[in-house]
Length: 112
Image (cartoon, rainbow, N blue to C red; front, side, top):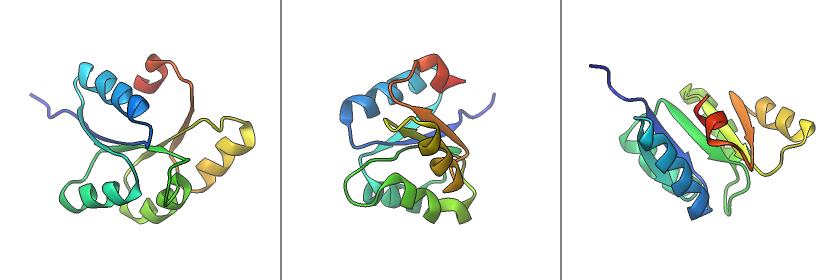
């Protein structure tokens, strides 16, 4: 039996964070959630996720800054943002995101 992939969802919007977590849990992922970069840092002290789903626009430290900071940890990051223009996606990827998903999104796109 394989261990489910561990996903850490970081988004300041509780409804989006919970919807993503519910979707991932329904599909067999182990999910932890954080509302901001500070909560993410606390979780990263005790566990190493297989993937971080990271919102760009959060209060305090934004997702781009977090992404740059976490590059050395080699944890794949899926940047999640309402900023979905091509230049925004390029910036997210240049800052270290491995992939980029614009809000609103279809849950099937997230799972893919």
